[in-house]
Image (cartoon, rainbow, N blue to C red):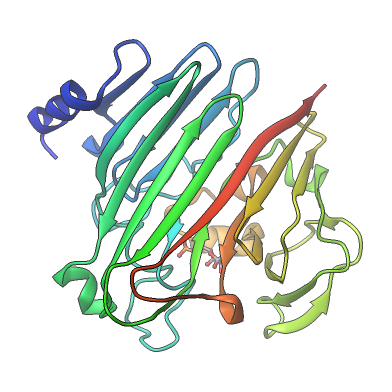
Amino acid sequence: MNLAAIAELDRHFGIPGIARVVVGNGGLAKVAVNTRETAGEMYLHGAHVTSWQPRDAEEVLFVSAKSRWEDGRAIRGGVPICFPWFADNANDPSAPAHGFVRTKAWQLESIVQAGDAVTVSMFTESNDDTKRWWPADFQLVFRTTFGSELNLELVVRNTGATSLRFEEALHTYFRVGQIEKAQLQGLNAVHYVDKTDSNRKKIQQGSIVIVSETDRVYLNTKGAIELEDQALRRRIGVAKENSLTTVVWNPWAEKAKAMSDFGDAEWTQMICIETCNVSDLAVELAPGQQHRMKALVRVVTRD
Ligand code: TA6
């Protein structure tokens, strides 16, 4: 998008002193939010949230210093939106991992201020390009409220005449001080598929502590999760609605080295806690219907 087009979006949607549409990394357009309560950023590319920092707290989201910022590539970090499939497409190995909406520009729908919170809405819909990969009619709306909490809402509308089956994920990268000093609570006794161990089904016992490459799909989960970060001396809460699966991922050292858009040592500073509906718990949506998945992130305590 050229500078004039970005300036035009700012003129149309911007709220002076609160939320502006500006040029971001790679020349990509982003909405930058700054209120007494919070600061945050969201790119039109992939409707990608890349920053959320409630006042008096450190940045909550991780973004790689080696991320790409270009059309056709996913931003490494923040909140990538995976749709309409998760990970590789079982029916088409040539299809892009995690679907096609995280690598393309979305359209800005609105920026609305309510007190010290700001809601940014973006949308994208099916077209000839998307139908190359997935022959369906749909519209996606993604609303993000930046405030003392971070509210993420993905709405999928079936705008066609046939039923849809899709996977969806808010593939959130949380920043941690030191992964070895972090743990996750809230998934005790939950069944999961271990993607690092031939997709074996296992049961979580106690808290999750990351001690090696971790890539797990927790099944039939509705409850909130807490990320305890001893190094940054804080707890992050992640609650959700209309999501029946949770993915937990850390690439650890070897995988990190193999990723060109990720720093070799950055695995120590992040963990993905993904609010999703994947695998056998994908969503079925009838024509004319919509599905709304929500994640609510908050800094529970800071010492
Ligand atoms: O969410 C976990 C996962 O599916 C991992 O298997 C890993 O591949 C990660 O996503 C990152 O995927 P990406 O396509 O962004 O490199």
